[in-house]
Amino acid sequence: MSYTKKPLVGIIMGSSSDSRIMKDAAEILDKFKIKHEDQIVSAHRTPTRLEEYGKHAEKMGFKIIIAGAGGAAHLPGMIASHTIIPVIGVPIMVYNDKQTKRADNSKFSSFGGLDSLLSISEMPTGSPVVAVGINKAGNAGIYALKILANEFPELKKKLKLHKSEQHNSVLKESDILKKQGLSKFVQKKFK
Ligand code: RP5
Image 1 (tube, rainbow, N blue to C red):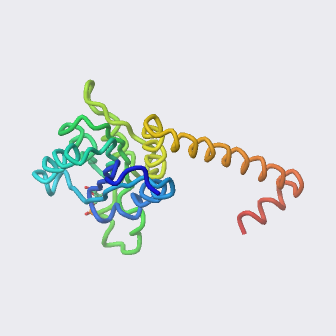
Image 2: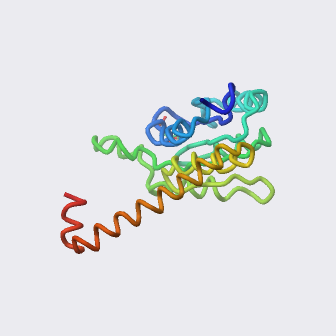
C-alpha cells in the first residue's frame, strides 16, 4: 500500500554516474512505501530541461525534490530557483567508484566531495537548499519522510518505530560488546 497514487517526491541527479549513490534515497522511500519519480537532469548539459523540470515538478504536485550532483553542483540550487518545492541536496563525490584507470584521474574531483557540499550548502541568502552529508542520499530520503510525516499520520508511526528499532539495535550490539569484550567484538564484526 502506498500513500498516494501519484509520486510525492521527485529524485533528480546530474548524471547517470550519480545513480549508484542516489539509489539509497530511492530505497528508503520504497521501504516506507512513498512513491517517487526518478530522472536525470543536468544543470550544465540540459539547462532548458532543468527549467522544464521545475514546471513538471509543480504540475506533478511533488512535496519534496531530492537533487544529487557532484563537482560544481548547481543542480539543487538551480532547481530551487525554478520552484518553491523544498529541495534537499545530496553532494556527490565524483567518480568515487571509478578509481581504476590512471588516465581518468583528470575526471576526479580533487576535493573529495567538499566542492559539491559547499556548492549546495552555500546558497545565497534568501534562496535556501538544505544539504545532507557527502554521498548521504539515504539521509535525504529519511529527511523527506520526516517532512511528509507531517501530512501522513501512518508514516509518522512508522518513523517512530524505525527510531525505536535503531535504539534497540544499539542496545543489542552494546550487550554483545559487553559480553565478548572489545578485542573479540572487533575481530568478529570486521572479519
Ligand atoms: C555532475 O558532474 C554530475 O552530477 C556528476 O556527479 C558529475 C560527473 O558527471 P559525468 O561526467 O559522470 O556525467 O554534473
